[in-house]
Length: 467
Image 1 (cartoon, one colour):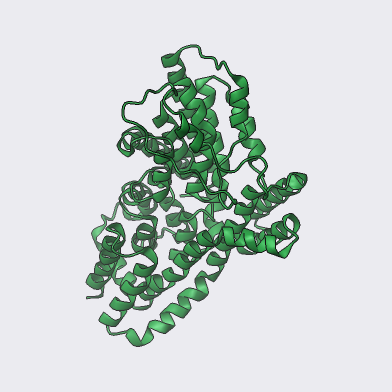
Image 2: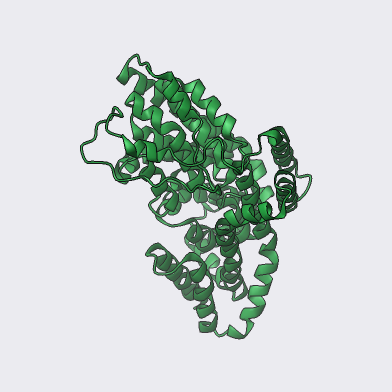
């Protein structure tokens, strides 16, 4: 009976969030609470939730302060020179433009927010693609894949969810996966190079006549948390050409956002912020301190040095409060779901059933099975549904065959390059909307390449012994 109720709880949760009948936070709380009562253990619900919250508090703290830290780094202009350098490198060479798109998306993805990454990347690269008549689906596809690989950083979402669902340390999941993820990122860069060469052959020799105009546009960025909000792309007239001649006011509106004179900039503190970020990431990789402690200290130091006045600090925190609340709220809501699933014994019964149905020969290879399954499952369902609903069951099944939860958690990250183009990911609509690309065109272009990137990461993870 617990097996049936467990699968019914997961199915109900998945259906409600995939059909958008409930928000993930509401579904994570109300559905398990209802099923906890249904199995006759409603009196223990409080104990399950408290146990879950106690184990998930470090993950929530890490996400909260990581979002604040990288939001402040964008506000103060840490990434501005990087964007300008990439644009200068690209010039009018389609190959360089596509490779630059991948590099820019990967770098900006360090903030862990897909929407911010896509806003910055599209705003910086769109004028070049339009001016050169390049394929815009190449831009959206490369940006989505680069962001998908980098989305596995511990504060990006999937790693935190895997750590939350399996009660593991995010650093133990992420750090050993770095070599495999670097292989995936190199794969994206290699693909960008090939696609860029294809665009170069298609378009032939190109030149941009008005270099001053391009130089002026290099300085225009779009980011999160500034006084001026992100640009709202308008609908493009049907039948517009690809040479950039039809953009007019639409292109100018797209490029409005964070200008070089925005009040949040701190140019005199640029090297301090760069050094602080380098030290923070190095300390995280070396595991000198727990990741939540590192980001807590980093966010406090970044705010205090860049914005010594209390009103300015409050303004920066308020600017990123929505992201902080949504992510941390999701983590604490997950405490109810995972607490009930574990406390009632549902996950044990479901895992037992799953172990009995998996052929004996596949049992020791459950990490490989999980990595392959992560492609379709994370594409057709949200990360919440996969990591909180499916991964715990797979992990229990793997444990019965000697596969560690860490191996299962790392394997579950494999599908992220494909997941970032899922219709269930809100950020992808920011990407295609700002780039004036039809979602169907983006999907047809990116799915095969993203799936190939996922399999490359999986193969590298197996080769390096981390999966």
